[in-house]
Image (cartoon, rainbow, N blue to C red; front, top):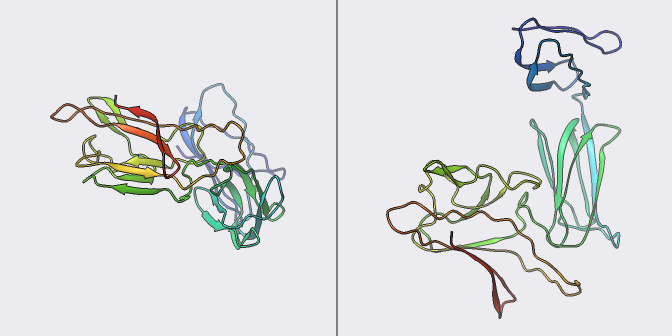
Length: 266
């Protein structure tokens, strides 16, 4: 079923269909970016109201700055991303903490910024000519949800299943989730570190033939009062022809002394 209507002089549309179901609704106008609403469910007797903001397809000059929220000093080397279904822009702030692009398409974006030694920032906003300057005030601290590559290193002796950063590809073993399909709730994007991420069967890219080690960049907690370390992890150890004997070991080291925080075996 296809229904086409044109908005009136006030930008209003009133329309409907006699056949209920799930539809994709598309809003178009010459000179504007097409706006699509997917999987809209129309139910008999229910009036749905949508307020749509459309943006000129003309590009805008995007500018921004990254600075320390406590000292106001500029921060160089901050990774910044503006992402939408149609466009993604990546920046690294320069020596003065600035970034810019003269040809960013107007629209709604998921916006993220991160640098090692600072809390990450993630929010949504609309970029258009009157709102084309985005500044990030970064709070000192250590946080990484792996939206960006902030310098973790991988060493491995395993033949398969080395740590890698990406969107997790879910696998199951006897209908039990082996590798998760989604990143942990609350992260900015769907990126995380996984031991093997080929998808397919649970045994296709699991850790075999050795070990794989993921190490963070160095972080300095001098001056922190009562610091805590928080992390999220997933571990699955089952299947195969023999007794499962894998483990996940999480440790903290200063280069001389290593302390095991947790050993997961099941």
